[in-house]
Length: 150
Image 1: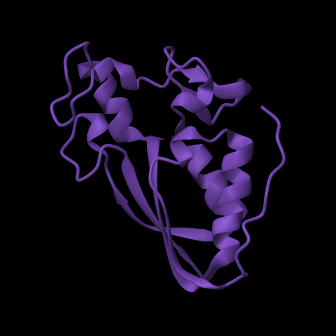
Image 2 (image 1 turned 90 degrees about the horizontal axis):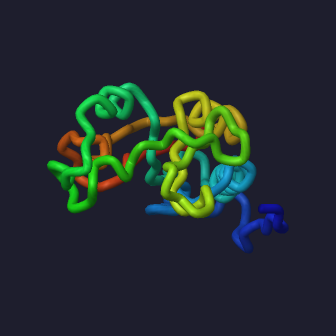
């Protein structure tokens, strides 16, 4: 859905840290790219961003064969809710589950999409903690990714 992108009313290079928990899991590709650049813009050099994702990586792909309609081993939702097999707005990098009435109800990003975010923003991925939605132990439901500005 097209809508105006609004720059944050925050000075460039002014923040040490920014967080976005369960935000990028609700952004279209276009919005995700725009606001990832905003994170880079407002962070000071060496500033960090803690952002959660449904990252469709190898751990996710490995989980697909064991998913069922049972409650997750490490979360209280059905395992098969978290299968991101529908291209969001025709993207080959942003996906959503079949149940999502609109893609932004739950957005997953594959590794190429993550690379696109990194390349467009100049941020560097410095840590990745797997989310327990992938049927692996994790401190948080979604993947927690920590980025740093050069």
